Length: 367
Image (tube, rainbow, N blue to C red):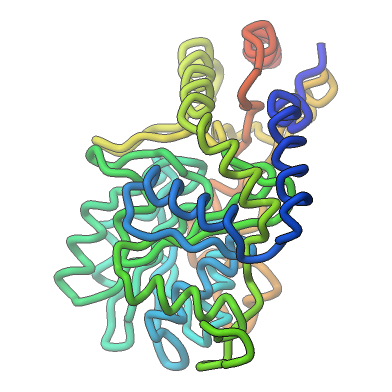
């Protein structure tokens, strides 16, 4: 049996008729940028995410950059980020001219450790950027408490966790302003690059709308030096179609994750993912850890099971950040996660037989 890591063909096949109808609607309208489809999606995603405003942008990285920009964060400022995350989180801070201040995660949850944040706060600190990694909600209530204590902004990187909760409140609704991604492989994926910003603050939403459109609210009149980062009509239409099923598809992922949890408990040296108290996950990824990661991945590949390592090289080891002069050993927990983590197949429509095959193959490796 072959089990792909992610079956985008199967996921999008279920939407084929609806996607074709949306395509025809956009073509027939003759309007492809900043039109009614975008407005409708922004309204509906804001409602889903329980925020007052949503602003569609070109991609998840732009969402983070624009979020930091409208908060006035730039040269000389510091932003606290997780030491283990996809590099986009760090890049957003760098692109506005600020300095990344990495904080280690909790080994059990993979998410930034709130108890380590305060010791990294200085007079230059302006914001905390928690990343809801792998779809797991950070301890956002604690992070917001720290931010309030020190008068800091919070920008959630919610690219992987749409629909996850912390203490009954949705990720992407805690921060002062928050960025998310609809990259095709996300739980709600576009058919290309796409992103959005959520916030409860009217003025921040207004500023983002200006910045994403060349710094203009009225065509040919530019108030500030802006960007071209607009969520196009076609992707907005596709996303609005998929939004209706997001929670149902998240529930499928949760069911698959629970199946993995049951079948892989006490198998070999496998460490299963854990959630912080009163936090949930949409299981964008199901990430296990094992000291035999490379050997297990090779064995699974030979047996037809697709896996991915998220992420093999932490940001502090990337050549792009050599200028910060981190030592390779500066962040041991991030290093350990990078060296031992392995993401197993998980996607809506995954069959029980496929889950069983993955689990039985892993058991046979350890046997």
